[in-house]
Length: 233
Image (cartoon, one colour):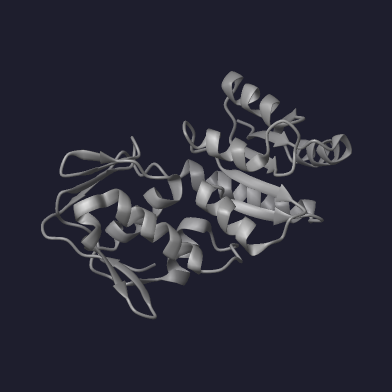
């Protein structure tokens, strides 16, 4: 089945160029001229990835991303002329999966999109459940409970917790966490990991102490009770 792409871009020529290229690569492509139309398209159909411009009339890309993440885990790639690091970090904090600065290579963009789609489709790990020290993570429902109370996590925070719990009692470096959660082709600052760890701890409440900081190295998950693998791949 062909992958379904939503391009949200207010420049008609840019939207057409991207659509033509991805269409030649076998994607089923839908275009949206602004954020409002994008949200309408997302209500009407399901997509495997969204390419999202930031600077748009009516509703900007950051606002669209925030709304999408309330209901969907679809991979989101920002397309923008803005290269400021704070903008990039803000985009990742909202739940974006990648950030591509214009001008860009269509071949590289397509490769990134295909990689993100493969990763997203492989995220459900057989419906498995990890339970350690009162923290329960369900891959299929993508819900996390701490002593029976649901923790509201953004997609990246869920993936960070999953990576740490899968490697219980082992220290994962920031570079390893970036590779596992953001992908090997992520070239941003590794402090984005620290930002999401802080949010993850806040969501876990009394269980926040399970996430240990190893100074100048990274993080580990250590809890009493439960079984889990201890491998770093």
